[in-house]
Amino acid sequence: MRTLFRSWVLILAATVGVAQTAARPQTAKKAAAKSATITASDVQQLRAALAAQQQQMEQQRQQMDQLKVQLQQLLDASQQANSAAQKGQSSADQAQQTAAEAQRLADQASANAVEAKTALAIVNTNRTLPL
Image 1: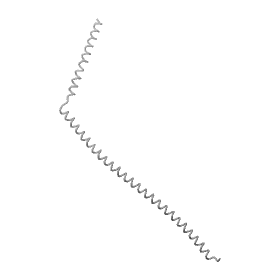
Image 2: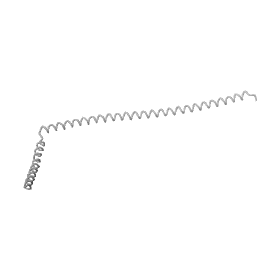
Image 3: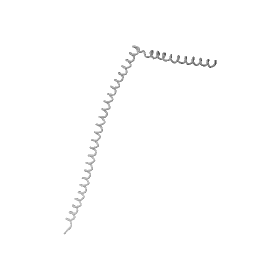
Image 4: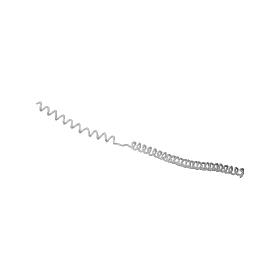
């Protein structure tokens, strides 16, 4: 008798379990169908959101274009400043070379003057000496 009772309990439990499992997918399907229903208001809201995003993207494109122009202007100004600095450095180098050459020529002239004075002194000494 116990065996028969256990068998009936087991069959009943299995039936209830199958019935509950079968009922769940139908409920899930109904919930999915309800949530999948899209209204015209939902579509309108999505369109408005899309339009707002597109407008935002266009504004960002314009800002990017402005930044590109500013960057190019800065690059051009930097290049001009570098060119002017190089020309200035070249002029300074040339001036330094010219000054060094002038100093060398002045030193040479000074040495020539000393030689000339020495030669003149020798000539003057020779004239004053009796022969």
